[in-house]
Image 1 (spheres, rainbow, N blue to C red):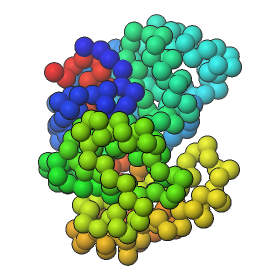
Image 2 (tube, rainbow, N blue to C red; image 1 turned 120 degrees about the vertical axis):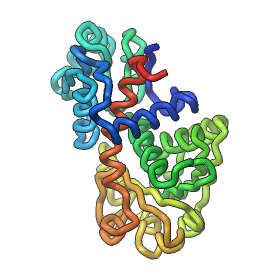
Image 3 (cartoon, rainbow, N blue to C red; image 1 turned 60 degrees about the vertical axis):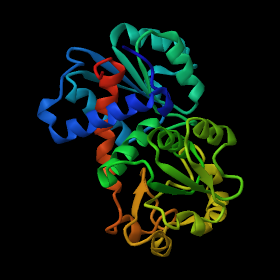
Length: 303
């Protein structure tokens, strides 16, 4: 079996469970990981720079016995020096998998449409599915079964929120979203998650959204590429900061999650980020474990 992974719901609930189980097994027993990419190359195409995504992806490929080939935007010149399709066809002649972190999701669609090898979305403007897998693994480690647990996402209804919504829907995790007016998750994404069976609630007041939640999640107010909106966003999101008071509304046992990098003093206070409820470093580590399991899966090695 070989297929693309451009969003979380490219996996069935059973496939998602298998990937999470494989990630957990590899984390527990790294010596037992099957080197299914031995003597194979994996093209890691990065239009947008990254720390966690690059290192976790490279180490995932290495753990599977493969050779990661890191390519920056200026190495390939997507749609300036060559079309996305021509680049993809060239990479497919050398490599067994393409994983790409891009600005526009349409570029991923074009890459996937041009080649027969699997294509994995490492981030686009529409989704961050590998991050969502790491989030689900982290919550699974904390709670066991996810069904019936509730995650409150406070902040920008962006690509991270979209992938979380799809992942929540496929695992039975309930998701409450609270964003400033004009920054909510797209209706299309909300409908898509609900059509997957997800319990997705939109709550305007962040104080109400977090009440009784098992965990609170946030992301930066201004994502890479939106820096020109930073001042406007800072004003709009002022009431959506996750601080000790907001964490207290969720309850004494609630965890805090963040996909990183974090801007202390903006979307989250240092007290929360560095506090005992924070599991952000566990999340960050899990990026590698889910990437490894996912790469093996799209290569057809998880049944």
